[in-house]
Each structure stands twice: as C-alpha cells, then as structure tokens.
Image 1 (cartoon, helix red, strand yellow):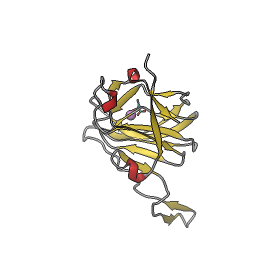
Image 2: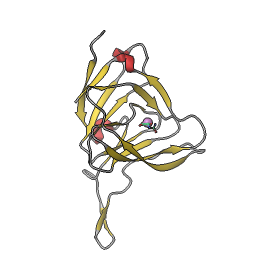
Image 3: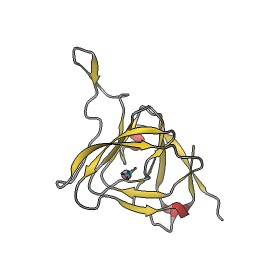
Image 4: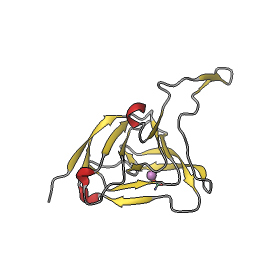
Length: 168
Ligand SMILES: NC(=O)N[C@@H](O)C(=O)O
Ligand code: NI
C-alpha cells in the first residue's frame, strides 16, 4: 500500500488565492463608519456569481472537525455559481483547490494547493473552481452563500485513491 503523499499548507492571502476566488476578510480593505459610527462597513468583499436560472442563497453548515490525517477524498466544482464560506465562530479551516480538472488516474499532475484560514477569514470559490468539500479543523458553523436552482451544479471526482494528506 503506497504511503500518502503530503500536501503542504500555505497561509491564506488574497494574492495567493486570487486564481481561485476571493478571501473574505476585513484586513487590507477600506471601511466606512455607519450607524452613527457604531459599526464599520467593509463592502463588496467577494464576487458572488450565479447563472440566470439560479438564485443566490444563504445557508449555514454545521461542520464537524475533520480528524488527522487530513486525507483528501473528493474534488468538486460548481459550474453554475460561486460558493462562499465564512466561519461564524472564528475557527480555522483548511481550503484545498485544484487549478484544473484533475485526471483521476494521475494525481502527480493535479495542480493542488492547500491553504489554512486563521478563522477570521472566509473564502469565495469562483464559479467552476475545483475544490475539496469543506475541511473544518474544529466543530464550527459556517455561513455559506452559493447558487440554488435548476440544473446540475455539483460535479465530483473521487480522489480517495490518490492517498493525499494535507500536512497540518
Ligand atoms: N455539498 C455542499 O453543499 N458543499 C460542498 O459544495 C462544499 O464545498 O463543501
Ligand atoms: Ni463546494
């Protein structure tokens, strides 16, 4: 049985994540005082996308912590809309993306990248971005904004046989 390959984790930054979508965070963004300066508004932090037949919806995922070793099992994409995750409890989570459709039998060719959010950062996957389903590092709730509507909006590839572990 082959040993799992390990995928290094890099810190989540807007620049590094730009090919895959946006990082949702206050740091580095301008804000405006609102409500008699009792709040500050950080506007337009992610580009939410849907096809004309769909609609954008807000949901909550109650995620259970993944257990080590963090073995990857699936890559998926949503061709009809974007998908955003924002931790509601400030809990860190892992984000795994792939630059293009992977060849199921050739893991070494997959352009995989792993990031870690320190918990005050969310992400928005651009429409059609290949990614691993949510990888929570602690039991946590996530606010999710994605596309609901007719049609098939989740294409999945089983990659468990790749035996790839995220090193975190
Ligand atoms: N299945 C589902 O709604 N969530 C996945 O798309 C995910 O990226 O976690
Ligand atoms: Ni998804």
